[in-house]
Image (cartoon, rainbow, N blue to C red; front, side):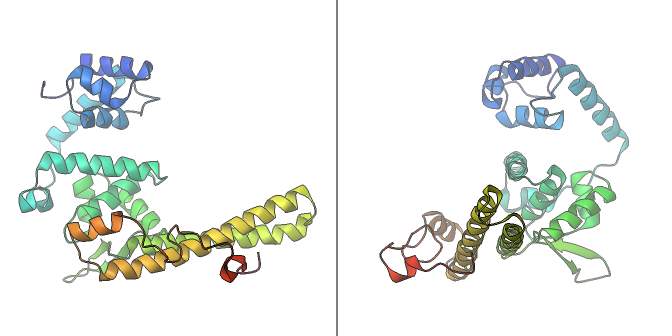
Length: 275
């Protein structure tokens, strides 16, 4: 498998593969390169729909020239801590960033969140983020403001000094999910109010009623499931055993865990709330 940087000819092969509708894995196989190398190259240079070989090659050369004149950031201890393979760490981070982007999170915010996840202490300052990601402080500031608003990170004072740092904890996704639940409930209330404006017996009113009912009931289910699993996972063992037991599936009979109640039971006919 050839090593080293991608050549201009490699990039032209990538462009041809994309135009033929090939996936990253197939293009990488033809080039004899890791799939992650091809995916990073395409994502860094316009994505599948905007990738241009010559432009990508010129951009790479410009970045290489800038790096020669810019002091590199100090190596992160977490990359090689615990005997980790640095290349495997980098590939995981790229994949995790891509998955977060696919959920709708902007790329810069996805990079910051992944950076926090891949730091053993789970906390990092704005300056450290800028150094590790090789971006401007303004980019970091915009990203962390967005993530704070989404309840995905929180800000705290560093143990020593006046500097603030950004933190993730075990409740990060619980808070994010509950924030999403609250937004859905607000939309449900707005839809309910719209029924009075358009009339319950009109097509618009019927559509808004369906929206309100769906958002209200699914929000209740999500809230119950989040609280249930928050408590369950807090009491389960950490590490591989805890992860395996959580992935294995929901506990039968618990509310909000994918198990629907018997439609003949009294609770199944009860409609919660006003929707």
